[in-house]
Length: 240
Length: 240
Image (cartoon, rainbow over all chains, first blue to last red; front, side, top):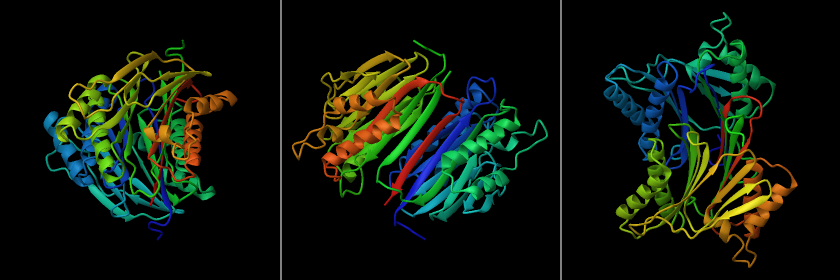
């Protein structure tokens, strides 16, 4: 373990929307944690298009607002669930994932309210966090599944919306996401952007480049500190 | 003008903290706008360290929460000012900048509550938005300065905290930021990350690599759509 001895966190998010829809129903935001570290929040609203976007946006807004006030991840997820349940009378659900780097505990905290698994890789060993987990918003007693793992150089976490899970199913060629990730990690030590883009591209190809659902992929990697102490963020937004 | 004909927005944020302080007093967050586009919010709390961080964090949280609900930029800035004034009884100020890509109006909206200018470049022609502007939080009637400019391929906006303005002053070598930017743009068509890093590096060098203040640089560029329709974000966070 290399706690506090020159680690850095690298995150990449790649998103594409369902073919021929105006808006992705997925929302992803990154927020700084007040006690250090950051959180990536991913929500996917039920159905697609404008209605789904409004839901996922509402959920992510609630979660980042709570996290930025220092609220714990599981409490934030439960609050978002109750809020959505109350606002939409239990008729609309959303999946919710949070990936947090907590500098107080030096851990990665993975929060799932999503049937889709989160993958966790140490070098080439891939673990699937896939215990049964329900979306938020349709019941009062929904609870997230939480995994907390010490930060370690070389660890890679991959979380995604169900668009990735369903890619290729229509054409009878479902994607084996862990196998694809393993192949990617095998060849080299790719950066998160390469991993996220490769997974998205693979999925898109299986759907003949007309994605049948919104797809969001988030890849987080813990690496040895390379070079300077500069915090960086880049965003690319195609306008259409 | 190439409205809606294959444009993309590229944003880069580079941040470094004052030498030998645990925390940067600057906060930068990017948030999606509910009607399309995104906003980058930069606040710098008075003084440095933990106190300044708490202030800039409070200000940015308030602004992104309002923007994500669809509130206009100037109203969000005024709300943050009144909120800080009320919370801290007018005793603490903060600078605040918002850089928004508004897809409804196809404009770049620049909001300043900051004596530091925002630079706007079209190819090699650099404009300085430097009308007198006051920080928020110390008076009841503080208003932001707003500039709204049609999105156009080739435009580059650069906003920064006052750490960049003060770089090198202690050693009698203040940085000429517009000239540095001009030199950068002159040579090629650099991407935002290159511009942000070069400005930060230049400033850091003038302070003998011991920055005398927190520095944050945000560079936004409007470019022709290059390649795919994938939205991307990357984050790099050194842990220490």
